[in-house]
Image 1 (tube, rainbow, N blue to C red):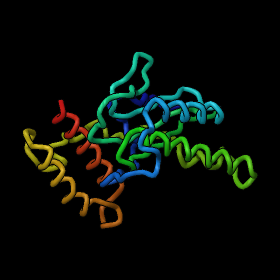
Image 2 (image 1 turned 90 degrees about the vertical axis):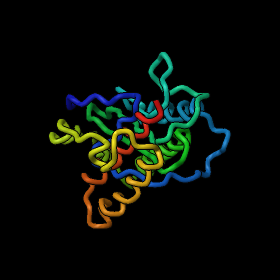
Image 3 (image 1 turned 180 degrees about the vertical axis):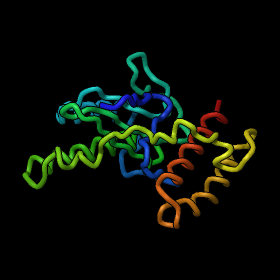
Image 4 (image 1 turned 180 degrees about the horizontal axis):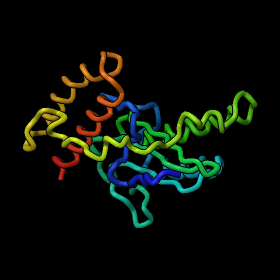
Length: 200
């Protein structure tokens, strides 16, 4: 296990994972609550045999450290689940959907599908989860640039200015447009930090 310990709040997006630029509406039930999504997710993690679970999002936490239901959606609805499987650290994350509950549900559906692969003998969980190992942030992350430097805006920028800067830079820094995973990940981190600071 690495020395990296993820936070439950604010969202600790996995190092090197590309962020979704525009989360969309999911096909999950509109009435799905964070509590219900957590219940299903925790059951799937238990079936998987996961330990040391940390569920990370931008939601406020309950006393037990899990995201609390009944609060407004954060600007960044992403969710990440860090856990150990047979002693090895892993992470699954999703920010494709516009609600935290939907992203949590998507992660539980993903785990369910992976368990099915193992159950039907098509692949092994150990082999599948090799690609989901939770890696510590790169050493260069220790000297992270401030969000306003990454986005090229003033620290007093508005939400609209942050989003406009993000969209413009995302076109250049996305790996499919000649950028890199590291640049795009840094940009996503900067946007998340900016929106969180602005919303305070």
